[in-house]
Image (cartoon, rainbow, N blue to C red; front, side, top):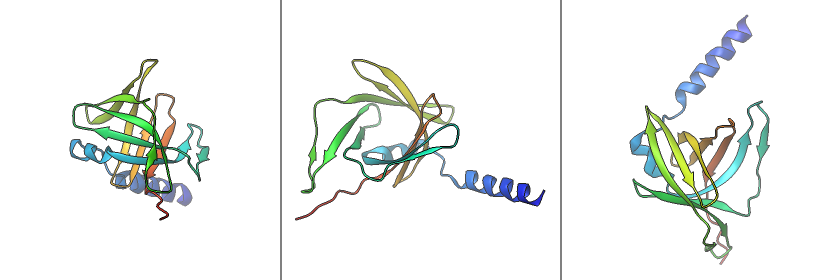
Length: 139
């Protein structure tokens, strides 16, 4: 019985310590994000140790976009013209990113957003965990 009690207590503390997404924190989404892991609904994880591309998100308060970019060793990024238009909507305190391309539309919930962490969850209950990308510069 004691192990169950401690597990529930630890879980409650962990959940209460997560920073809640607020309208003021949405601007933190701007910038470069590197995927670290995907958490599957059954608890399994897929870890990403090396990424050739990172996501660049730009949000101006009413609209924006997300695109894949490829960091270079000189601090610059290779990119193409492909991007996903985004709109962020607040639905009773739950913030959703709505994506649109010429081929599809989908949405993801912003589970957590801080200066250095972004967690998104899609309709299949996959959680995408990102960290703020710091460019590599060898000069």
